[in-house]
Length: 227
Image 1 (tube, rainbow, N blue to C red):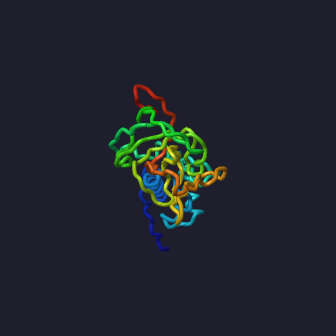
Image 2: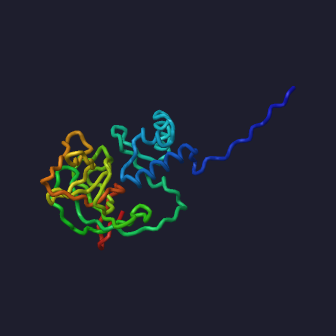
Image 3: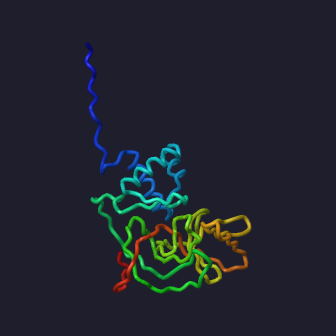
């Protein structure tokens, strides 16, 4: 009788996660840091070189394990929960001042209110950054909801498809930026709103690019934003 060769079990998944799950978390985290919003399922699948159905399966597993929270009715609504960050990961933080509110609806008058500050990972808040509280619902499909805070890196240019804070005729708004041949478009991420076409006659300036979103409830005390 031929002896069957015993197969040794492979290494146990780190933190209870498989390689596929850890890779997916890393893709989501890097995308959020680079773009200030969550990737779509298709984008995750493309980066990992897998089918969308496989990406959905892994995302569901991570959600069941408490690493992600997802709104299945929206394209960009994957939220990384606190346990997604390794507990032994030591990062430096820098203060980012909250300068007031900005509209994710119709543009509103830009006012600096100095509402407090966030402590943000220095790897995210590179360069001069500031934070704003979002009012309105025109960016919900980008995962930016009324009452959220956006972390913004100061810059005067943007690439097509990047979310920016722009000043249009002295009114500030949060929209997705597109440069067309004859004009600039500020696109809301909500079908209930129309695209804003910026004419050459209008005063227009990009104040910065959205690099991160904060969704926790914030209380202001002694000039600081506290979770």
